[in-house]
Image (cartoon, rainbow, N blue to C red; front, top):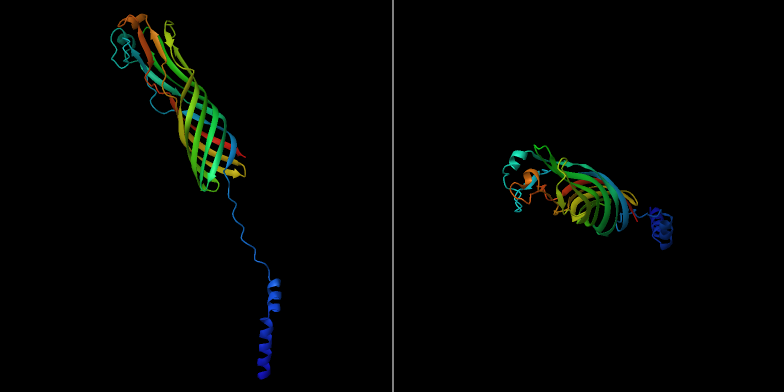
Length: 269
């Protein structure tokens, strides 16, 4: 019994010796640290393309007449304008496509991203307001967007490392074609109507990283290009009955605005 106890004590001493412990741990496999998940970095420049639709579901308004040139377009018509037009007024909006190019810079601060965007787009959108006379002549004011440029800021929050939700807003400038047609009565005089109209654009968007330097997204924007002084004066036929100088005609919807929804593809650097 004493012999076995002595043997166990000697073995225990050997196992607890520094030399044996060093050899044991040297032979044990090293524990590898857990790999950290890759974190996307949104800081940097980007360029991209986009495309979508332009539209406006609101009431397009109608053609209005200031029959005595006092600046009031809401007065009830009197004869003979009332006999010529009655209530034959209408309006319409023409939805279309949009597409363009964009460039920007973003800065990531923790889970937040702030940045700036400049873009230029083709926008196929127009609206018109008309009056239909029994003479018979149709009078139509039309506004149409050609090119649209914006300079905006955006601020967003990273829902995940690769998904950014954001709001945006800034200045807008558009090439706007204002026109007035009256087949059968070419005697109108058109004044005002700037070729370039300035306003603002605001909206929201979401962007998802699909590769190291590529994101795709969807964006909504409301664009308001404000009012202008576009006006059309007629001084013949029924228009000079109340005022010898004639009557002014214009659309009741003075604010030129529209909505866009578009898809985006961006390349980040």
